[in-house]
Amino acid sequence: MSQQTVAVIGSGGREHAIIKAIKKSPLVSKIYCLPGNGGIAADAECVSIGVMETQKIVDFCKEKAIDFVIVAPDDPLAAGTVDALNAAGFKCFGPKKDAAIIESSKIFSKNLMKKYGIPTAAYEVFTESAKAIEYLKTQDMPIVIKCDGLALGKGVIIAETLDEAIEAVKEMMDGGKFGASGANVVIEEFMTGPEVTVLSFTDGNVVIPMVSSMDHKRAHDNDEGLNTGGMGTVAPNPYYTEAIAKECMEKIFLPTIKAMNAEGRTFKGCLYFGLMLTPKGPKVIEYNCRFGDPETQVVLPLLESDLFKIMVATADGTLADTEVKFSDKSACCVIYATKGYPEKYEKGLPMTLPDADAFAARTSTVSDALIYVAGAKKAEDGSLLSNGGRVLGITTVADTLKDAVAASYALTKEVKFDGGFYRNDIGARALKALK
Ligand code: AMP
Ligand code: GLY
Image 1 (tube, helix red, strand yellow):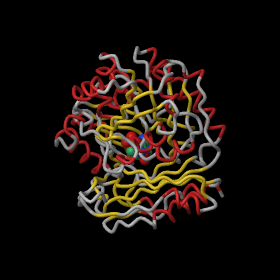
Image 2: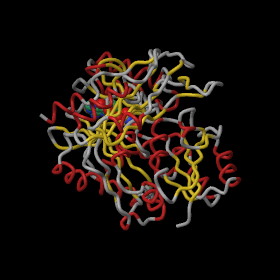
Image 3: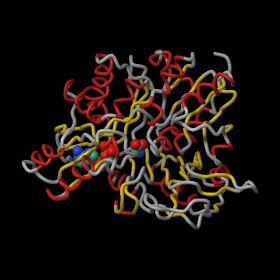
């Protein structure tokens, strides 16, 4: 393969992690990020084209003779950006629209799992609120209500009481709280057990799981506060043993790839398995059609193989012949968010970042330290200003999870960001599980 010019679509910490990883490939000569952000600009040329501006993306790829496009976020994947790029002759990493539906419609994914016997919570689908409410009256609480479509991770309500459940159904189906995404709902059984994320590479022929990880979704310590996009991650996830991994491959990963093929919706790209390890075995909570954020920020630093080669192989269907190797080290990512997130927060707040490489060099336990920028813009004087809810992802890699957690916090304390906050207990649950 000759050297390649690459375009990455997206603007968050996940995209920054992908860019830092492919930058290490000898095959990559130039990286554009559309639109990127003020921090990503240190690693790629950012171009102000939005992720949903499909025609502009296609035109840009033509103008710059792009060799390979990585479409990272769910919205453009669900909208068919890969289809449009493929039609214009561009090779992409990411599923086409007909496969991205595995994330963009919960009704589709639940019905797929039922049809192919893939373990998941028992459920019913409703298109009318009156019928949903009648059903709720016959069910045990707590119960889980999910809107069908994409809702930035916020379209899931765990209702403790019948009143709460009815309220949630009314808000979603009649109140338009999530727009068209909430017009239809899935009501499902409440499951218990540790949660595990497994990202995987697949070309439709084989599926290769990446190292497992654990997200921390609530805004505050001890899993208090509102659900967020994710406040921190660790990898590997200590609950995910080799025996469980084997069971997941047999009962979940391979059956899912085969099911998508059988439906004529071959999935190529990164398939995200959100799992719950229930007393009755691992079950699927959700699929995502893309890399997770902030799971990517701990998984990719542990990848020893060439990410770019792997991505090209998923598009070419040659993944079986491609090396995908992870180190046996551990990683921890602490998200620095703006005070007020996930509700109202200010933008344009000043921050100063430490030198992550220098930190890694002087910290004997640390083999790698990375500061991923999720939401920032450049001020006129070149300094960084916050520009979003989740602002930074501070990641370190060490031989043990304990050292990675300690080091990520040490590095986080060197960040100057008065308007920000972070959780103090990322990795605490994982460390407890290791004991
Ligand atoms: P989702 O957007 O589907 O990942 O759901 C968000 C979060 O809600 C998950 O990470 C779980 O913590 C929780 N959740 C979703 N579905 C269930 C379920 N059936 N039982 C228990 N918790 C759930
Ligand atoms: N961290 C969860 C997600 O990316 O959906």
